[in-house]
Amino acid sequence: MSSEHVDSESKVSGNQANIPARIRRELDIDDGDKLRWQIEDDGTLRVQIVQQHTGTFSEFEGYDGDEQTDVTNDHDAWGVDTE
Image 1 (cartoon, rainbow, N blue to C red):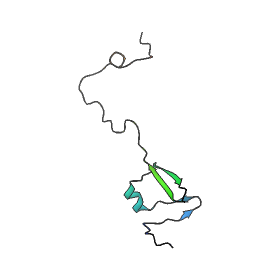
Image 2 (image 1 turned 90 degrees about the vertical axis):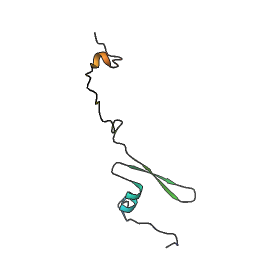
Image 3 (image 1 turned 45 degrees about the horizontal axis):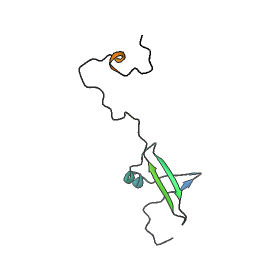
Image 4 (image 1 turned 120 degrees about the vertical axis):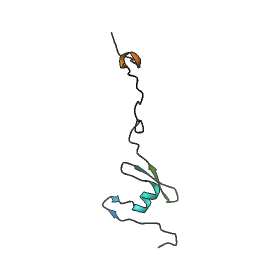
């Protein structure tokens, strides 16, 4: 074993490996996130975490005004024949 510090290790089972819980927590890795793997010329393995967003409007809290709107007249109806 090399003299380099080891944070955690996991076992490969089939073609899968678990990410240790401490690493997942520290890097905020969650279900649905993707890992991008890259091998450098010197053999160093790099892993980039691509966090999954739940959707474009995931933080939208809705319209909180008390004024009613008419979708056909008040909003963009481009490409829709309203007559």
